[in-house]
Image 1 (spheres, helix red, strand yellow):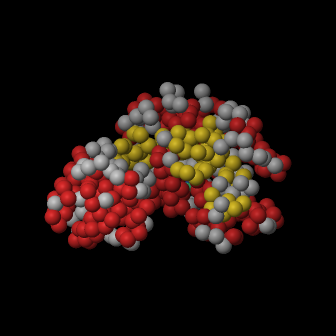
Image 2 (image 1 turned 45 degrees about the vertical axis):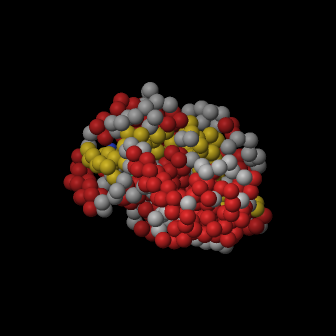
Image 3 (image 1 turned 90 degrees about the vertical axis):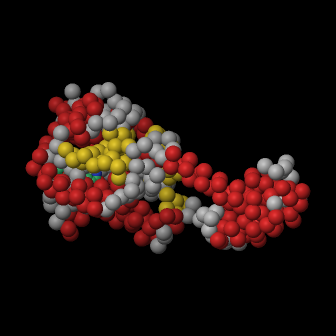
Length: 423
Ligand code: NAD
Ligand code: LMR
């Protein structure tokens, strides 16, 4: 890491030297000759260590670039060092002059358990990046506005440099006004013994109103992540109510399932989470989801070849991921909150900023993998420039096809159960 910092600076230095003359062939291959730099620290050109680094570079440059490019720099290289100081000041001034304008992020259910675990991470830059100022619109039910007041106080007390405003409201149209990123969390959680689908009759209607308000006042490029359960069908309800927006601007959160599956595979294979990719969650965020590791890799190698345990995959891994939410409710007496918040941050971050990884996201189905239009089905996706695309043409063996079919069927049943909300 440190070494590449040295290279970056050195390349910068070569541009400066180029101003004094045409770059030599040797200068063009300069970065390959930088072994002498070692791990030089260089946070600021004004650091004594940077100065020493530059003096070292310039002492070596004659050997590499040819002495003809040096003399114009001046004795003891003071001229160049001054130039670099000035350049750094201009860069810093330029950077602050072009600071990104704040974007507005809405979170519903902001005083609830997931809301509380999410807001501070958004405000600290973990969702949209360390250079993206944010305004938080916190939406709650009237009865929770007092609790929300306390959350606002705590956000203020963190003095987050990126947090440029907080609006707390129980008015949906105000809450979604000009919002570019919305996390729809506010909804009832299930209790012990319930399936997520049992929440449809209580929660479904919430998403009609929210979709309509988003349609009316949100930024036209809004991205909406539905977390409240049953997430996929609530997502369908909200997207249907947002008549002027594209269904692709809505997704339901599958990321918690993906993160859970990766964690389970890492534990089984005694591997690091960072070395695992291409784990897929297909279908519904329910006990009928299909956590699929047929395409998963560990350190670039096929995970199943390393694990070599089909029984574990079918009898432990898949049911454990499918039923993890219920296991947490049984243990905690409340549904997952911090891990759900973490997944929401990961999910929106990767959607907004892009990622090299496959991420499982619920998309409006369009015939991919035999899932006809009409539901939000989770696929492995590529995310680039704010757009999601499903990874297509993956081989699907009969076992996987059967597992995916269960989710497909369930999602159409959920859709039919809320037909009245889909007009
Ligand atoms: P919670 O009860 O702690 O908080 C919910 C909050 O939402 C409450 O403060 C409530 O006042 C508010 N709320 C309810 N209806 C609202 C509305 N119409 N508008 C605005 N706010 C409203 O619940 P929680 O633990 O934060 O869970 C929230 C939802 O997220 C639940 O439906 C839960 O099942 C779901 N969940 C989904 C996932 C997932 O992976 N998709 C994971 C965990 C939880
Ligand atoms: C989860 O997966 O933890 C959530 O959807 C909460 C639940 O009801 O299981």
